[in-house]
Image 1 (tube, rainbow, N blue to C red):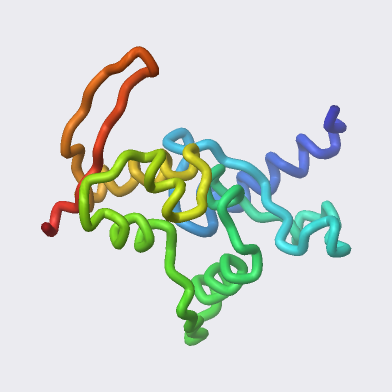
Image 2: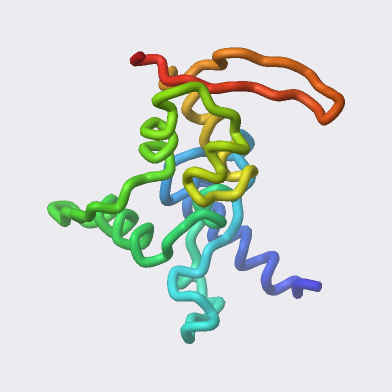
Length: 151
């Protein structure tokens, strides 16, 4: 069980970051926010407030820590450019949607968890990048196929 000290630190980090994911910019209560260690504890990082950053569930679970840290650094450091051939999850999904696919198929193609794919799909729906091509209900639950809007 976490100590009262951790809860105080967590709240201080959330308040400092205005209850906003420092990677993608999403705000609470629209997303589940967590506290991310900039330098992971297993790599010698501490629980000091300077080493903590607010992150949404999807960014914290699906991150490559160095890449996201560089992106964050570029956002807070004027003039710093980060260049990489790394493709974002959303770009991978758009590329995979050359034909309608289910969230489970997208998870397999991108190598991400179904939960992460569902979070990204909901964001892409809000941005108008994708739409539901068809939907049905089976004994196993709801099933939807997604497609790009630019096709």
